[in-house]
Each structure stands twice: as C-alpha cells, then as structure tokens.
Image (cartoon, rainbow, N blue to C red; front, side, top):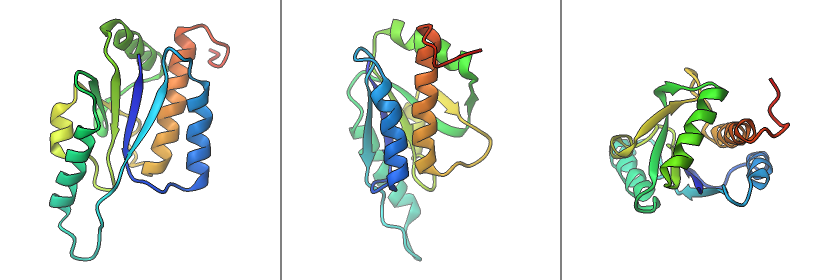
Amino acid sequence: MKIQLIAVGTKMPGWVETGFKEYQRRFPKDMPLELIEISAGKRGKNADIKRILQQEGEKTLAAIPKGNRIVTLEVTGKPWDTHQLAGNMEKWQLDGRDVSLLIGGPEGLAPECIAASEQKWSLSNLTLPHPLVRIVVAESLYRGWSLNNNHPYHRE
C-alpha cells in the first residue's frame, strides 16, 4: 500500500522538509510515503478566496490516482489516538487500495475534496500551521506502522 500526502503549499521552510523527510525515509518499501505539493493560489487584499479554494481543490483531486481511498485532515474530523490510527492503517491495508491524505491551505480544503473523502481525521481541535501538519502526519503514520509491526519505535 502506498500512502500519499497531498498538501496545498510549496516552498516550505528547511525544517519542514527535513522533518518530513526524516519520517518518510523510515517507511518500509512495501508502504512508501509520498508527498505531493499543490501550489497555493495567490492571496492578496482583494483575493477571491472561494475561487482560489475551488482551484486548489481541483488540483488536489486531479493529483489523486483513480481508486485511492481519500482521507481528509480537518478540525471537524474524528480524532484518532495512536491505536485507532494503527487500526485504520490495518484496515486500509486489508482494503487493498492506496491512500491519499489531503491537507488544505490557509482556508482548509475545498468542499469538493471534503465531499470526496471516505474518512475525516482531526489531529487536534487547535488550528495547526499547515507546514507542521506534514511532519505530525508523517510521524503519526510511522508510529502507527511501528505499532502494527512490533517495531521498537513505539513503546507503551
């Protein structure tokens, strides 16, 4: 199973790239973690946010391979602890499809992305900086994998 992290935003600070890549490289070859960046629309004083969000949503949905399970990251999603995430990851593997996790831009995800999702996951009730979310998701997925595979990274 391949896991795709599709995130709105490019040109991340070095610490974000370093943090994400650290967890990305730890994933086994039979469960690679891939990052796809979607360019964010230009936001200015008089920006048409609704149109920008729609364009970001179209680009995001176009980046998802046909048949993938879509999981959106949203404040209004369901909070999962590590064991629940590990359980979801096991179900995803048994499902036989690849998984696309979607992270929106400053205003979140387009309604079309949310409507296409099969699961909605909330990392926190807090609004987290979108660059930081990439690292938190990568680490959480790696921890879930380690729990499912009795790897020493996750200790109870």
